Amino acid sequence: MTQHIDAKQIAKTFLDSLADKHSQHDQIETVKQFVAFLVQNNLLSHSGKLVEAIQEEMIKRSGQTTVQMENSGDLSEEDIENIRKTAASLLGETVNMDQETSKKLLGGIKMKIADKVIDATIKRRLEQLSKNIKQ
Picture 1 (cartoon, rainbow, N blue to C red):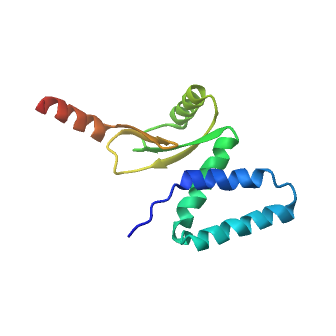
Picture 2 (cartoon, helix red, strand yellow):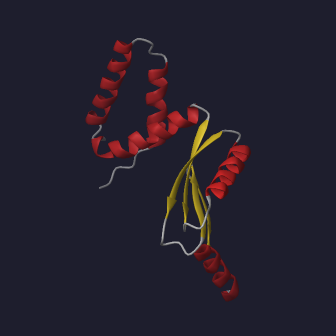
């Protein structure tokens, strides 16, 4: 049976517990306690998901957002920069772009911001058009 965990909540709790630790010794002890918690609750198999959630929470707390963007390769550096600036303006945060070119896409872009996905690909538009025609 697969165990469901709330990685985001665990990440927040872990980072909150680290926040008030000022000495390196106290920080190391907190990390040791966190690892012991993972072992005691059989959560080590979820460590990849937890590390990702901790990284996301750290970025969020720093006032930055990472936008993962997938495109078909038809965007110029200027286009990507304009998308980054627009996202930063809308979110009110510094935006880091993690951009990937995918030959699977016919065109358009797919973006992931935190746990939200914006799918503006040609494939998605064709699916929507097909669905509208069938109605």
